[in-house]
Length: 406
Image (tube, rainbow, N blue to C red; front, top):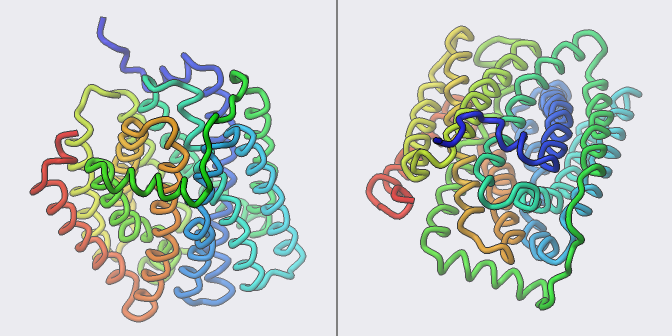
């Protein structure tokens, strides 16, 4: 009998992953509400695209600075305990952001400071959470689990901004942050219900600096890993920051308000959800290298076209396809990386992945995109970056076989 095409089969098989996924998805709805409100609040406080990019940059600067050290910590600590601690701290951060906004004390300084705190927590929580997934499902179901995580992320991207826009209209900006703080209860309940075998500390450990060097040596000496990380880096730095500029695109390019901005983000989420569920359904029936090549090329071409759009009625469908290509590209890269790396290096590889996908994309990508957009406009910032992506994708995937034949 051929394997099931049910995209949710991994949830059915694994109780621990089911608890993890449900809690994370509910919490991510609140996280996307906060992200949407935070970008809009930065624009309202300053009316400057530079500060919209700066808020995204400082959110990820700690990831750039500390994630490699965090990876060495994750490989020698119990991952589930680290994830629980991170979620508690996220709850506190969101509650403080709600309070300063609700009381009218919020300034761009407060927003930047609390965004930095969020990034510091993320630096340690992301590699721990990414590395935990294989303990919940095993290596065989890892690709489906990662695709389902992407589907939950995008389901939240659809629902979160839509609810956020309604909350802003009815109750004010502050309650997007307040509801996010409450949403962390869902993920904490799920995490405390998970039952895993007793954690066994590693028998041999090296210093944190040597552990980081060991991980870097592995990435540089393994051709498939280094090629994959280069592709992820270029697409994260140049591709993902279009989301950072979405408040500017919505307000200045498309003439939309907060509700329209939320709808744009929802379209990205709907497309991403469709792509993630499709990827979870097909599993290993398709060659990862071919999917990686197709999604990389289409993602770049779609972003170039989006940069020229001035009508909301055209922007919405384009963002559906952009969201699909973006999530398929990221999920395939993540699953392939986790499939290739040995368990003893998993925390460090996931830390390197978050260093690139979150740290570099926001600190370097968002800052550069915000700066360019402030000078020549958001369309040139998005379209120019996508053109560079397209050239790199052709060189890395079409003319070289290492990744295409994975």
